[in-house]
Image (cartoon, rainbow, N blue to C red; front, top):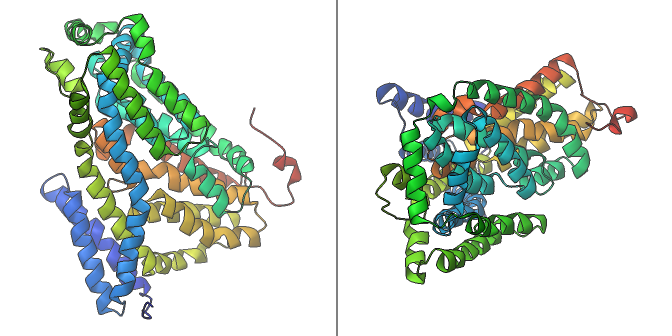
Length: 474
């Protein structure tokens, strides 16, 4: 049995959290870029020392660490298997074919818009931002390099499309979690989210279209594009027939998503399909494929740009990200289980006397929990359950509560450098959160729209508002 522990005071809780941000700020000022791994180690150490000095028992702290590790394990395994999938997709010709034809077919001025739209379709179909980032995202990063479009912009566009699936696909785990936490019908929850997501998404697409106007055919270094096309064609079979065959692993992923096969199993199965495809169509051996999938794809095409595009992936390449994910979730688990987050949110819960204050408080609480827990799941669960009685007390429909969970908890998760989504996209796309942050428009426009609705009292439906309950977004 765990020994009784003293719940930390509000002051101690704030001190524990503020230390993390002070260390990050100090590193940004001193060296311009924080060492997130060691920052989290210091933050964990500081939290443990402070909590134990103020009455928290070690058993409870250890329980928090194990809780965080449990939350991290499945996502981190998925991350490792995506590391395995990427080189398999390269070796099988899937990603080379997407880059090869993408460079020829996509207009540079429409590229960012196209990347966002295709990523949207992929994420809604699969319900997974991870799958979208690890497949189409990697391909778009390669195409953008050939077109001379900044990788941070491309990562932002991919991220906007990827978030959509995490937010509104009925196949998404976070979508189902938010509905479950707030005891809301799944499709009522999705319908409610369209009111905040749609305007934020449309604005995002307009911004990508405007950004894309900076790039046209004349801005492309055709020498580089020709070199990339030649390098790919000389090292992979990208004739139309083989290019279509190479899409089989992606089709398999979508099929498994529709059949609700677990993401973990889907990544492994798709990797095996791509591995055999590479052996049959591209002539790779089994030992060679095992090496690629563990250490990353390696090829010397004689073209530096192609080498930079395709020499990537592998389970080992993801271990930096995996270790960061475990540290971040261990820190979040400590703060959750020891009552630090509860102490902070208890103070914020006083700001729930009306609908406007409740929604705004919920938004900022979820963002805060995202920052200190490194998990969108925790950011959905804790504020969602904490504020649900306040929504009911004020007579506000639960689909407003469920929507707010995702408007703040889900969409901001990729912006947290030490969060699960943040470390995933950084590791997969090769662009840091600080670099893609300005271009991940949907991630911060959605909570802004939610706050505007709260201030103007728009689409904040009451229980007796049966008319709006039957409305849908056309």
